[in-house]
Amino acid sequence: MSQFDVAIAGAGLTGLSLAAALRDSGLSIALIDPRAPTRRSFGLTPERDGTELASTVPPRVSAINQRSMNFLRRIASMPEHAAPYTRMRVWDQLGSAQMTFDAADAGVEALGYIVPNDAVSSVLVEALDGAESARFHAHEITSCGRQDQSMRVGFEHGDPLLADLVIGADGGNSAVRQMVGMRPLQRDDGQAALVTTLLLDRSLAATASQCFTEVGPLALLPVSTAHPELASIVWSAPAAEIERLLALAPDEFCQAVTYCIADEVGEVLACDQRFSFPLRRQFTPQFVKPGVVLAGDAAHAIHPLGGQGVNLGFADVEKLVELINAELLAGHAPGDGRWLRDYVFDRAPHNIAVATVMEAFNLLYGQSNPALIFLRNRGMRITDSLPLLKMQIARLASGMF
Image 1 (cartoon, one colour):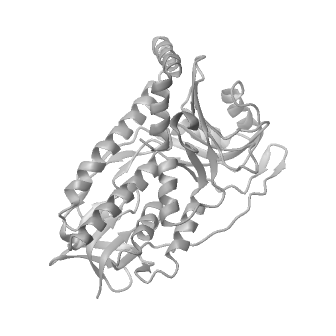
Image 2 (cartoon, rainbow, N blue to C red):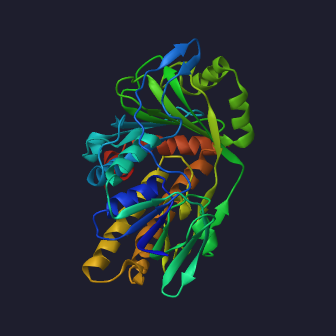
Image 3 (cartoon, rainbow, N blue to C red):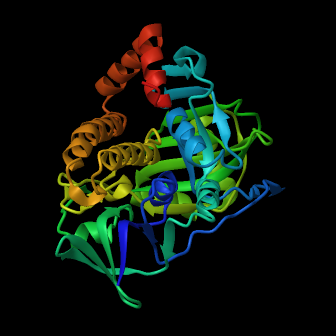
């Protein structure tokens, strides 16, 4: 039975970045996922046929803030097709107020970057190429529990392995979390999100936009510096409304989006294939146990409003790497557990605060009460008139606080 210092469950962005960040630590690492991560290289060559678009942009993209991008550059390299946004614009479709935030106000080169998830995975896989310390196991985990002083991880096929520390980075439906008895607090109110790529009649000018529509928040994100008229969208709404939007013909869907954004962004000329996924918010109060720790969506999954989910995951990884390296310098094994409380005390308050703010905004802008509409527009105007407050919000958005 193979013995490792660290076993990482999940080869998504959180698991891959953790393995890449630890590859030179001297630790033996097992990276476990049923699907082997691969490098992908793709060019953006959009083609349009009427209102139908073949954008070649992957449907899942992430808004990676400046701090997270700095972290990626340290452990890997700049992902391909990373489109910077230097400005953020927020407005309410049911009002006339809006807010704008600039990277210059925060003193950073960009507030963040819109990057295809596949492009991020590719640079992390490349960083792990040739790393003798990390071994990939293409297995599905069927058991995880204590065996003497180690954690035993079992598979449906193949021999089990032992690890001093198991890190659950296997997403919102984490098998590790379930197997070790960590129970998340969940909220499922029938919301879903629609994602696709649009062709607009004008450039987004490196601006990420958030429109609070009548049915839910709609984010428009610049995905290419070479094609600034392309926008990736994430539209959150009740699942029944998302199903209705998915069923629309391409021209009807373009009209529906144009109705929401025309005054601020312009007309939608064409749309790519549309996809949807359910939204489930959850937080695991106890995300550490002896020999086990959770990170990323396995520990917390938040509303996509603001695009902060992936950045919380990268921040988890940064703290884990910092604490594990400190343990190694002190001559302790990573599974000793001396540092787990520090991880909880550092990450739990921040993760809860971000989730609470995102949920509060979603609830506030999900109301059609005229008094609330007046108050939230009033608050937006006041915020937009306060430079110091806007500077702090811009720094929070960039992660450079």
